[in-house]
Length: 376
Image (cartoon, rainbow, N blue to C red; front, top):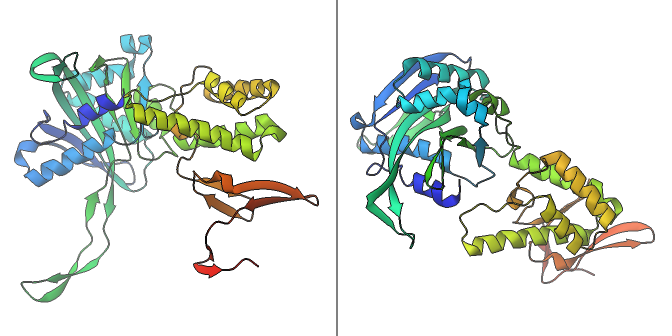
């Protein structure tokens, strides 16, 4: 799915646009026991309650593609006779009215998700009458291409508030507010099936993770039975490690910064182009980047080989997952220096009398813990 398709579905989660009539779910305690189940109609809720429920579900379509939102792909055999895919299809086709399927799904999630404390599983079904889009990219609301029927799931931690003191104006008195349990934004969730090319794709799903460190691999395996995507944070760590290990002595400050500048340049160009398709790079892209940085062919091939071993020969990675676009950080075991991304020209490395130094040209005032100091 691309940004436009995700955005089109996100706009569905408003009270005047949604086709969601009810929400199913269960409340689970820290021991993994279901305390209660519910099947609540949105029609009996207040407008504020409706907005909060829809907001929780909408959150599973937020974040960056390739970072928080990841494509899940099913193999043909799974779509034909896979039990996991069959369960998802039953949930969708029954519009969550199949009690056995709902119960099986709840137990599958509970057995595999790793969350501390209490949490809530929310399930909803929507049928989107997809408007026809002409050649000029304008939508014709009265002309429909198909009905996109899908389910959306959100797994939300339930946290206890702290005791507080409140002032009641009408009584002119202070009173204690007792602790209460509140539903937090989802930690994980998914949309099934995928909405590719503004149409139903039964071979795909869109998976959401709030954390870029942990995608809950056991949950992905239990629900989809597909290889879990590598978390964005781990992609960056792996990329940094193999860049340094593969290039060895050739991995200088200029090469590391050159790689970063080129990847950041790709990100900026893609942003300016307004291309809805996610920006991805492959092994061949990185070979060109390293060549531009002056790395010799032997080391480029060593990097490419390890790159494919780490991420897969056909891996499509987002450059946003590989570099920090906001800052440059130089670090030793004892010192860390953060630099504005557009001022890398201020930094040089030197070896003086056999000792390695990082040299930073000072422009303007220099402060230490907020105190302006002079350089003698």
